[in-house]
Image 1 (cartoon, one colour):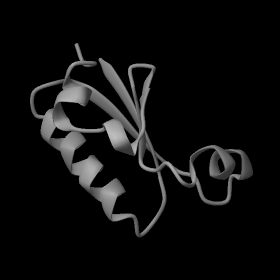
Image 2 (cartoon, rainbow, N blue to C red):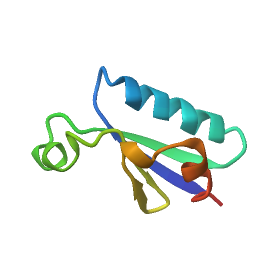
Image 3 (tube, rainbow, N blue to C red):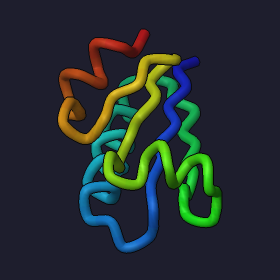
Length: 77
């Protein structure tokens, strides 16, 4: 089973686009998908506010600049 975590916030168009990518990949891979809203968590806001969306795919972190279908897929099994 693959584990993907998305660090996101509400009203984030890029976050929604990344979620669609994960849903597409979920059709061919077993994926446990967790959505974490960073707002209201001081530590997460400091770490990710200007970097969201951030995906953690099986322990490997991808920021918004490096998230695309192939970069996610190559970290799945």
